[in-house]
Image (cartoon, rainbow, N blue to C red; front, side, top):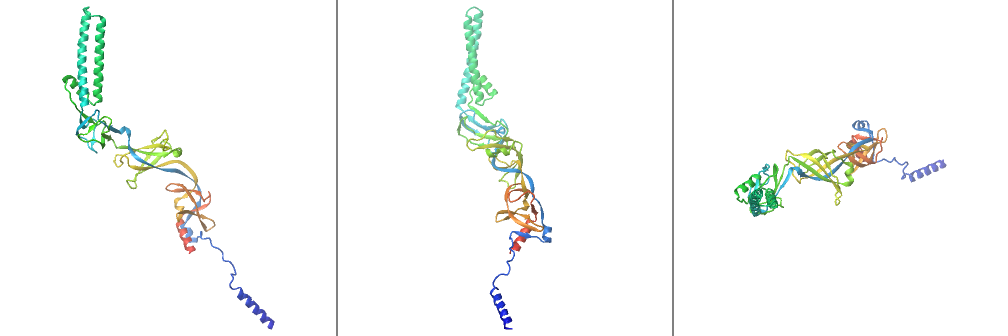
Length: 375
């Protein structure tokens, strides 16, 4: 009897000594794993990851420029002083419209030289005609007649050269003929528009002395403009003429203009190591201004890689993740490295293999369930 009580006491002592120890280790729970119930499974959609082609898109900063054939820089044809201005910034003009009037002593000198050359031709013409008559009468030799003819030819050449110079100085045929017939000098001439368009620059005021090297007015037709950008030479292999692009205009929110690459430069800038690309843009609405900043979004060659819909990405602390199906109703949150993307899909550069099942719809609900279970 005593022996039984003694054994019982020993068991009780041993049991009390081991009471602070865990009888069994509980199963560790993975905080990134979600076990979805039947209701949750109805809210999500998953499918096997597959190869998805996505066009590589390049964002290239650029600007709006005037088409060169629709641009005219107007200078004074001769040195002189501005006495009248008719064209102002923003004015629409037609070819031949008078933009400014100039008084030029150089023009007066050239007109005087032309009048003298005309008079010299008249004098040499009479001398040659007289030499012909005298030659016919055996009064002068043939050599003397030929000399008068040579002098006449030289005088005519001088007159034509002087006339051409007046053309260069902006005079018309009618104005030159008037000088020839009236022998009256006019030192006033006009600066006229060379093309139809709008005055976009004006660099002159009344009383200002100008010369032919200065651009006084700039006229442009802005119903069509260029979008121009410089692309690094290492990226030109992704592009070709005719590729589609979108033009983002920051000055107008959500303003995207469609276009195509109309020109891909033939040379590389040796300093910047870039190549010029250009697109032509319809601007009948007049919203695009020269030198306005833009971004060209160029779609280049297609790249094929494992990808998922953009809705499959769960961002946690700015780290992209996806949910991968690991069992009948088990899903594991896995960090991934993203590649290029478009509006619908994104490439996974690292973290996903072709054929693995990925949650493509309802990832948000799964993540909420994960956070709730974790708490």
